Amino acid sequence: MLRNKVPKLRISENSIDALYVQITLRIGTIGSQKTHYHGAVGLKIFRAANIIAANRIEPVTVWDTGGILAGPLGNARSAVNTALDRQITQFAADWLLVNA
Image 1 (tube, rainbow, N blue to C red):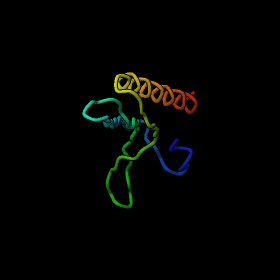
Image 2: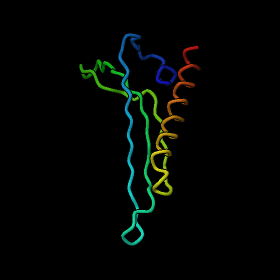
Image 3: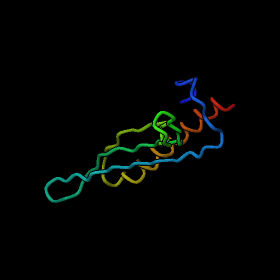
Image 4: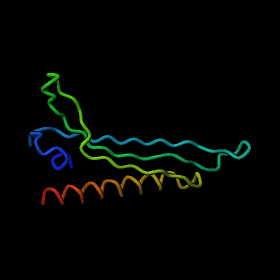
Protein backbone atom coordinates (compact mmCIF):
# COMPACT_ATOMS: atom_id res chain seq x y z
CA MET A 1 0.00 0.00 0.00
CA LEU A 2 1.03 3.64 -0.12
CA ARG A 3 2.41 3.62 3.41
CA ASN A 4 4.90 0.89 2.47
CA LYS A 5 5.93 2.58 -0.79
CA VAL A 6 6.55 6.02 0.69
CA PRO A 7 7.47 5.53 4.37
CA LYS A 8 8.24 9.23 5.01
CA LEU A 9 4.84 10.42 3.76
CA ARG A 10 2.50 11.40 6.59
CA ILE A 11 -0.96 9.96 6.03
CA SER A 12 -3.89 11.31 7.99
CA GLU A 13 -6.15 8.62 9.39
CA ASN A 14 -9.01 11.14 9.00
CA SER A 15 -8.72 11.40 5.22
CA ILE A 16 -11.66 10.22 3.16
CA ASP A 17 -11.07 7.52 0.58
CA ALA A 18 -12.97 7.39 -2.69
CA LEU A 19 -13.82 4.31 -4.69
CA TYR A 20 -13.64 4.51 -8.49
CA VAL A 21 -15.10 1.78 -10.68
CA GLN A 22 -14.56 1.84 -14.43
CA ILE A 23 -16.39 -0.55 -16.74
CA THR A 24 -15.78 -0.47 -20.48
CA LEU A 25 -17.60 -2.93 -22.73
CA ARG A 26 -17.87 -3.08 -26.49
CA ILE A 27 -20.40 -5.18 -28.33
CA GLY A 28 -19.14 -7.28 -31.23
CA THR A 29 -21.17 -8.34 -34.21
CA ILE A 30 -21.11 -11.03 -36.84
CA GLY A 31 -22.91 -9.63 -39.84
CA SER A 32 -25.70 -7.57 -38.31
CA GLN A 33 -26.17 -9.78 -35.25
CA LYS A 34 -24.74 -8.79 -31.83
CA THR A 35 -22.92 -11.89 -30.63
CA HIS A 36 -20.11 -11.12 -28.19
CA TYR A 37 -18.49 -8.50 -25.97
CA HIS A 38 -15.00 -7.48 -24.87
CA GLY A 39 -13.83 -4.87 -22.41
CA ALA A 40 -12.29 -4.15 -19.03
CA VAL A 41 -13.29 -3.69 -15.40
CA GLY A 42 -11.14 -1.67 -13.00
CA LEU A 43 -11.32 -0.70 -9.34
CA LYS A 44 -9.24 2.04 -7.69
CA ILE A 45 -9.11 3.55 -4.23
CA PHE A 46 -8.12 7.23 -4.07
CA ARG A 47 -7.08 9.30 -1.04
CA ALA A 48 -6.65 13.05 -0.80
CA ALA A 49 -2.96 13.97 -0.47
CA ASN A 50 -1.64 17.34 0.61
CA ILE A 51 1.11 18.27 -1.85
CA ILE A 52 3.05 20.71 0.30
CA ALA A 53 5.47 21.85 -2.42
CA ALA A 54 2.55 22.82 -4.69
CA ASN A 55 0.27 23.96 -1.84
CA ARG A 56 -2.70 21.93 -3.06
CA ILE A 57 -4.63 18.77 -2.32
CA GLU A 58 -4.71 16.13 -5.06
CA PRO A 59 -6.28 12.66 -5.28
CA VAL A 60 -3.69 9.87 -5.31
CA THR A 61 -4.28 6.20 -6.08
CA VAL A 62 -3.52 4.02 -3.05
CA TRP A 63 -4.86 0.73 -4.43
CA ASP A 64 -5.57 -0.36 -8.00
CA THR A 65 -6.59 -3.48 -9.90
CA GLY A 66 -8.31 -4.39 -13.14
CA GLY A 67 -8.94 -7.08 -15.67
CA ILE A 68 -9.97 -7.80 -19.25
CA LEU A 69 -13.26 -9.50 -20.10
CA ALA A 70 -14.53 -11.20 -23.26
CA GLY A 71 -17.18 -13.73 -24.13
CA PRO A 72 -20.66 -14.40 -25.48
CA LEU A 73 -22.96 -11.37 -25.22
CA GLY A 74 -25.38 -13.16 -22.90
CA ASN A 75 -22.64 -13.57 -20.26
CA ALA A 76 -21.55 -9.91 -20.08
CA ARG A 77 -23.54 -8.87 -16.98
CA SER A 78 -22.49 -11.96 -15.04
CA ALA A 79 -18.84 -11.52 -16.03
CA VAL A 80 -18.80 -7.87 -14.88
CA ASN A 81 -20.44 -8.79 -11.56
CA THR A 82 -17.96 -11.63 -11.01
CA ALA A 83 -14.97 -9.41 -11.85
CA LEU A 84 -16.13 -6.66 -9.47
CA ASP A 85 -16.80 -9.20 -6.72
CA ARG A 86 -13.27 -10.61 -7.09
CA GLN A 87 -11.70 -7.16 -7.11
CA ILE A 88 -13.60 -6.01 -4.00
CA THR A 89 -12.68 -9.27 -2.24
CA GLN A 90 -9.01 -8.72 -3.17
CA PHE A 91 -9.14 -5.17 -1.81
CA ALA A 92 -10.69 -6.41 1.45
CA ALA A 93 -7.97 -9.08 1.80
CA ASP A 94 -5.19 -6.57 1.10
CA TRP A 95 -6.71 -4.08 3.57
CA LEU A 96 -6.95 -6.76 6.28
CA LEU A 97 -3.27 -7.67 5.77
CA VAL A 98 -2.24 -4.08 6.40
CA ASN A 99 -4.78 -3.31 9.13
CA ALA A 100 -4.91 -6.58 11.07
